[in-house]
Image (cartoon, rainbow, N blue to C red; front, side, top):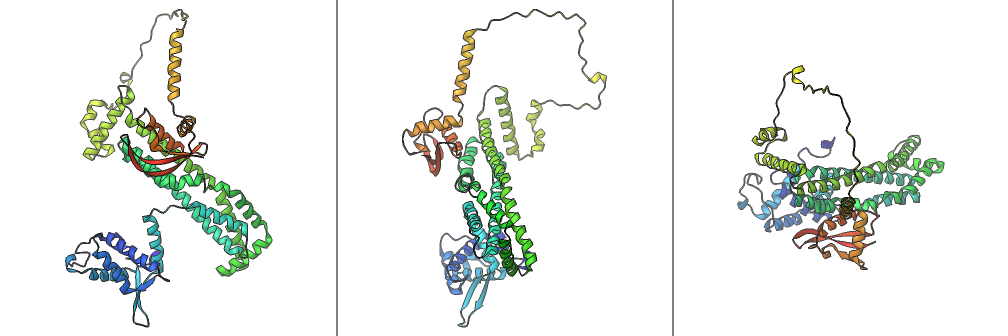
Length: 464
């Protein structure tokens, strides 16, 4: 059980009102101890580090209750540093021991080290490097080596990490799709799509997964090597003998475990296409949902679509302003003037509409042959061609980019003539289609800029 390993109050510092102070102190302590030969350092050194933190103007504040009902102003920075160390020791994050020289040394607990590394990765939004997992599996599968059992265990571990990363990416895209409903303006939607989503998902993971980290480059040989190992009696014998020693089991049990691990990795790589396909579908669905929602908010007019948009916009504003549940929309007075609905307790013949049946004989009227107006037909055809010309397909966007590059190797998106017509719309589609391998250009993200009244994250357009 988890709390047989770590104390029951281990997470209390990070869930208390003063969690910001505890977290910043933990980060400083971990940074200092991480530079040592072990995760231990003299207590006075850590006290000096925390004292320097509390003396700085950037230090977070805690209430008097968090300082055990003492006034924060009555405690010196050194008192606060000692207090934090005592609290962290009591919560099981650190341990204090005295060596033969009567010098106290502070050590991070072994489980606390693992938790800190995970929390720091989350805090820094560290991206998953799929290339490292795949290349490690590929290298181990090819080498065989003098330790086939240990190599197989590393293959299983890296395969599990690879699948965990892919599933996390899959779930992350779903979260962005759900978050679209929170954005009520076009600016918020485009900011979520072009800045947040592309920065945290596409540029960090999805784009690399389709290019440098592509599983398909290594998978055929990985499967070939692993299947050959599963059929090799020499490999199974050597790997089983090594795993039997490592796991302290019999060679017969180790052989079964070896075959199980080989087939587990082979099945994982064969089924990986299902996860990759779902990631591709969710990515396309998210981009389409964002664009459609932006189009809906931009649509206006006297047609049915425009009127419905205005009605839904007004209702949405009223629900947000009054903090109503969507199920309570009929509490709005405006709904009474929009829709008239009444209930009917029972149905009988009088409540059903009876159509009038004509008794006259039907006499068909002659159909006159009308000659179409060639001028109107040509005008209609011209309008349709103009409409088709305005459709921004991937091919047209690719041709537009090559035209704007005009022999150059690369250019910034901010160099496009954004003050001309629909150039900004074209830039959005350049960003969307730039992740496809079929395009003649590729993108590299840049910094946020403001140009011609538009604020966006600039990016570099380069020829492939």
